[in-house]
Image 1: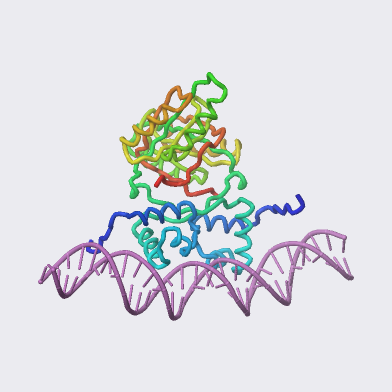
Image 2 (image 1 turned 45 degrees about the vertical axis):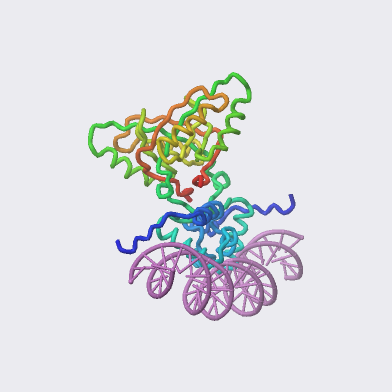
Length: 157
Length: 157
DNA sequence: ATTTTTTGCAGAATAATATTCTGCATTATA
DNA sequence: TATAATGCAGAATATTATTCTGCAAAAAAT
């Protein structure tokens, strides 16, 4: 690659990322003020951060409760290791379930930690049904969230 | 409240939420096209969704790995129930730790499920140290994420 | 059923913003 | 020391946000 100008991020870049992480719809004019630049170089930097993959996208944060998804649950999933491709099969099917908000393969007493976003117990039963029907699932253990103490607001920069 | 016109969301509102969840920086002109409205009523609806709390904010999605936070871990925390306010004390201190990305109080075999976003093992040791030093913590159990299978991209609408 | 009121929309007008362009100053490179 | 490259500010232009007006459909009242 000739044009591989992936310079390390400077102080201003970090400030931009912080600001946009807090308010992704901030106008470029305001952003420029916040980081002590004029609008043009500020916009340049944002475009660079986007094209180089530091910023992957922008999204609206929605209120789950007001949209009928008040319940969160974590499910620990253990697979049986009889065939070699159980993991791939499981993942492939799992990611297509809309109520699966997150899924992580973990090291430890089980294989996958799945985070569910659902409207209530009926929905939970339904999704759990789909989950245990997935190929290779040996056992599951659910933890229902009683109180959300801290929710993800981005990286600590 | 006299002016409590919290009408239920219609088809267009949902379409707006979906679109902004996928691209929170979409221009109002494009959004209007996407939901088959002219810009003015479209903007009105967005403002209403914001002021009524359906949209809580906007944020940039950053690439954690490119910003030196490639490691994720989940920690199950159990508190000792000797005093009545252990939970409040614990929460209060915990939310201030920057590397704590999420924390949920759960029903089941332990009390809190904490999600950590860290740069590596050294950072993990450091944060775990802070965590076990928190008031009331009886025991912890860590699960390190080997592979992120699905990451949160918003609500299924 | 008809009037009145309200609601939500489109489209025009204006204000603000994004984006492009030019030239200057600073830093790196030769 | 000369030359190129980089990053910036500020102006110019294009695009977008926002406000305003009037119309039409739906809802409420008579």
